[in-house]
Length: 420
Image (spheres, rainbow, N blue to C red):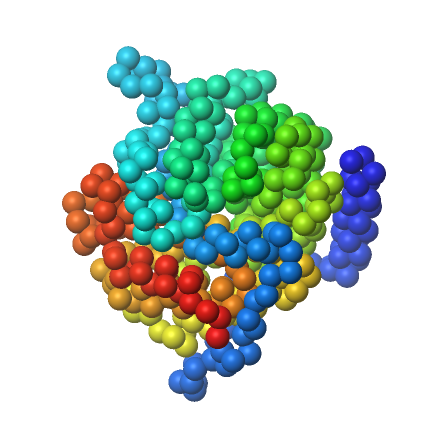
């Protein structure tokens, strides 16, 4: 393993020196490609390729079909146990955190509903910051609660992804950042945490995947335009993650692992900076990114203050950028033998179910052309009816029913549709 690490570090350092020599000034690339709308014509979809799996990792990603995220649940954070102290005599710490961001305790019925709807995989974001001591030892009760929900997924024969989530969040409190000045300390922390997580789940089968981290940012919380050294730090930490998991043995010696770009971004500079870690297991690594499409459609006005938000889906205006990003992922990863998972996508409700269904169908179908599996970000919440939903929620977790059946159908149907 040391030999592999030496090789990958040499490659990374050589790449960094070469890149730095050719760049006098680093500039942020716009995530959404410029789209020409002078001609109202359909994009050349015939150029999209039918994906043919060539390896075990590609086969596994394809077999997931379509995924759903259990968002704003185990990933909540409460600034170091303040909530636990205030509620210790009412609920357990596990219940406090699982419900802290407005969702009910996760039940087997909820996960049954996800499987029954036709989803093939579930992503379970998990934050550990408030569940560790100063030595980064994780509370056993928290790991057991994570495991209980993983079992719900396994009982439904779903693929399941767990990660470390808001431990890479904004501000000064996260214990893991893309900080090139403190890599030895960050690597030790990451190894300590992932050794515990991986050790706990070492005997689970290959339908359980580990994801290195969520949307890791630099010390200034920049989503793009960070120093190239921050991108190098992400590559280093991805390597540390792979090494730590493999070292725990058991089924982890060959488990499929997801490694992320800086900020989980899809901009060309972030993708070009990514280096696949060396691995003692063959054909077991998957690249992970997040992409919501055109933000004025996917997000609300308060989140896109630089422009005007809109609720109608336009095939040319909103579809072409999706196709451009998928092609970029194909050219940069898939054609180089690296399968891809889009761990988060979605569009917030603006009382536009039909338009969001068109978005969902186009997005998933376009990704499928390249063998990319997508996970809808469902952040849940408690709403009286579909019209009251103000976020990405699809599942009514209180009543265990779906708010927007048309969107569900679009997601599932597109994931099963044969590539054009």
